[in-house]
Length: 77
Image: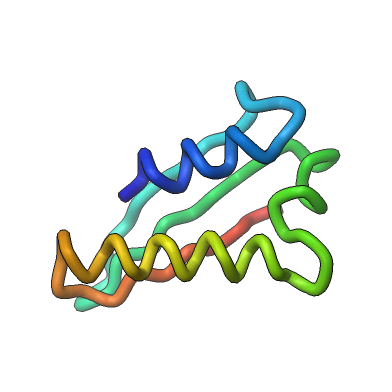
């Protein structure tokens, strides 16, 4: 799951080396934290949050196959 988020984010940003993804579990939920360079934040979020929503949708669809847990993608500044 983390590799999927990292690959998607690296394809969007100007500084792919600054993309970091961490995973933590909180009960029945998996939280994936995505960090990018401050200058790339707009590219990951997109206009009106459309790209961020698309990333979350793809990850949730992939999570249904892998895990029976709720997956949350947090984009952290």
